[in-house]
View 1 (cartoon, rainbow, N blue to C red):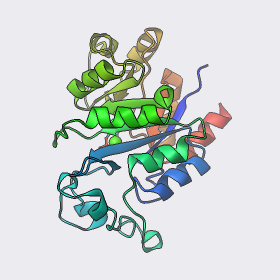
View 2 (view 1 turned 30 degrees about the vertical axis):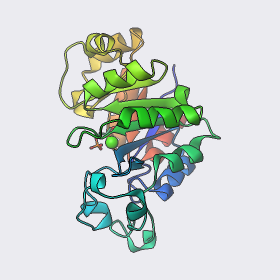
View 3 (view 1 turned 45 degrees about the horizontal axis):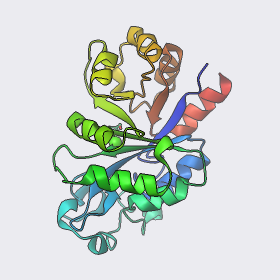
Length: 243
Ligand code: G3P
Ligand code: CA
């Protein structure tokens, strides 16, 4: 059986403030073999790791990421909203995450958050950095913006892409092949179990999100998914060890 990739969603977001360095480090300690994170871009063109388009929810500040410089962003505190123990955590840059994972064999799933805000040039910025770290083989770029995935494939045919979607697609591997994508990053309830083997036979694995319940993880493993994106990599690691 192929090894199921254990993707820690936004780092180990069930245990630590999402998309912080401590969340990424904790994920690796808990047995994650992959890390999923969200990429947005600052006013001065730096890819940074934050889920929302604004700093409001996680850094208690009203600005949009696109309107602040990296210097301004680095003064924001992004841990205490989760718990006071994490006060002082910052919003990481993509570069910081790649430095952390570079010496390991972790798979990195970079979700480009270019749906609400467009971020011209984000694809090239991210790809240049991934190539500079020599991580092309270990990165999967995903997005709900499938046009952006086509653009990524045009710039970097060697980097895998994953189609993010929320609802049932019919024979999604056909669509994946059409746009040159390599994986299906489906909302967990959009996974049609009888399609999983067919997609996998076409070389296109499912990597469903965000699966936190053990029984649901188990069912997806049995269906034959290639990876699971979870806030609790420890739960998934335990199940995969028992397999
Ligand atoms: O990449 C899977 C998942 O993270 C997509 O949804 O909102 O958690 O970024 P969201
Ligand atoms: Ca995400």
